[in-house]
Amino acid sequence: MAAPRPSRRAVLAGAVASAVVAGLWPRRSFASPGDLTFVFVRVFGGWDTTRVFATVLDNPGVDTEPEAEVAAVGGLSFVDHPDRPGVRSFFERWGEQSLILNGAIIPSVNHRICERMAYTGSQVETAPDIPTLLAHAQADRYGLPHVQVGGPAMPGSLAQSLVRIGGGGEIGSILDGSILSRSDLPVQSPDHAVTDLLDAHARTGAALRIARGRGSADLRLARAIEDGLAKVGTMKELAGTVRWDTGDTFQGKVDLALDLLSLGLSRCVTLAYESSTWDSHEGNDEKQMANFIELFDGLADLMEGLASTPGPNGGSLADQTVVVVQSEMGRTPFTNAGKGKDHWQHTSALLVGPGLSGGRVVGGFNELFYGEKVDLATGEVAAKGRELTPAVVCSTLLALGGMEGAESLAEWAPITGILG
Image (cartoon, rainbow, N blue to C red; front, side, top):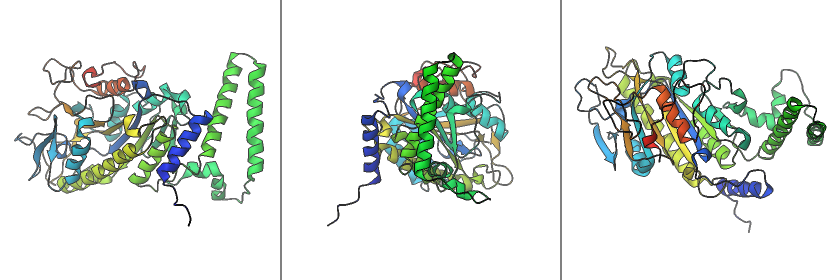
């Protein structure tokens, strides 16, 4: 009788353990902010925060849904609806680790400008986004510091720390050489003996260049080459383990993120949650309903995957990974003639994971549906507090990841009161 085939998670756990023993990945303790890993989920188009995050059902100036009610799990309140049971079940399962950030202001109503400001904290074209900054700070520990699966890339001046992955398995094809078959001209791939010989020759050349030591700049280049070759070798060894081909589905993107984090290849993974109907200038209720149902089903799969996938040094990925869910803008409090909602400067974000004082809502919306000010030291709404500007939100995410600041941010103003 044949032995049962091991599960994929068992294979991953074995791969991680073997890699640690072999010294490919250092043994790490995920107790400090600098050791946290991140999954960023970007919702492109502008979500209606009154569907889940903004509990403003008693505000007569805001158009909300029939049958919607305010619900709470501990100290975290949210909008519940009988047609969105997945939202309620998500917060029942993960509410104690969740933090809703309400009333963040993005001073624009242009999608591209809002994306840049929301994700970088700056209007400067060369400003890196937050996951790239976090990944670059620990780039020497990860072969692929920041992997972005879909959506516009904003690495700014730190492009060396970003890897973009398409939905067609391009990276996997590069690693196994099959990408040569996509050429318009016939190309014969070399066999493994030849490629192994070429890799060995390149490594030897880098080692000789280091040994000769012809100046500091030459030495840095040689060491960078040697380090890069070592990382490529590691990636080749794992070419059949990592699910590079996402199939252009959110579940496929989640699977790739789990593999990259579990194997210690990446610190940050950004997943684009794309649907043209988020930008709901017409038929807002129907479009936002369908999108939020699908989004929270996907987030539930992501969180369950993190909880059941081993981390590189024991425990689960959920013990070390923060999930950040954002949209570049919100939607107006009132509906237009087409029963849609237009662009709005005030929005929300969802953070789930370790390092946070979870189970709470930070910020809020006033009677005009503008964002409330917040005391940065406590996270509580305060008339003399600070607006939740892009710089404040981005500073908070960097501080969560153990960073002291960034040159690309105009100001350093984290909400220290939410950092657990």
